[in-house]
Image (cartoon, rainbow, N blue to C red; front, side, top):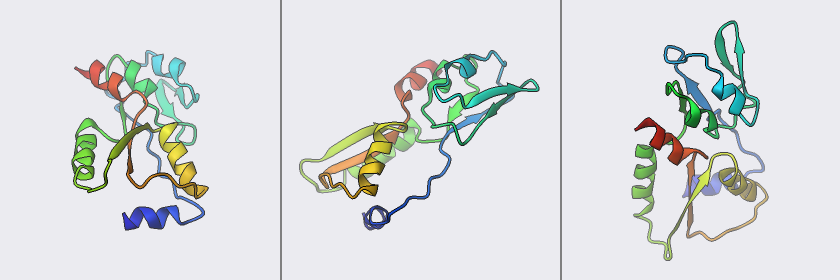
Amino acid sequence: ALKIISLLSKDYLIAEFTGIELDENKCGLCGLCLKICPYNAITIESDRISIDKFKCKGCGTCASICPTNAIDLNIDTSEKTLATIEILSKFRAAPKIIAFCCASCGYAAADDAGLKKISYSPNIFIVRVPCKFCYQIILRK
């Protein structure tokens, strides 16, 4: 909690790349990811997929459509999400609200609120998940 308060009291945040990981051995160069990426972060160059880390927002759209499961998200997996929920369940806040915010929109909005020093209830705990979190799990089964 103190770490979060410390982060929110600053006028800036340092962002890490939380985009996607590509397993080139699985990639069949079908180009579906390239066509569906809403940020135009994926290109094919010299028979290889290239990901622009500055454009990629980690939304997971490409991972949800990849027929060979060559693309994986570099953020919370279901195991990490469940572990996070377990940790948050130990807080004594009442009522406790766990908000599952997508990596691209909801989580960014919560970050923006913190940067602008807009307060929201301390009973709200935010868990970052990819936009296509559920779809990715379904497709991998």
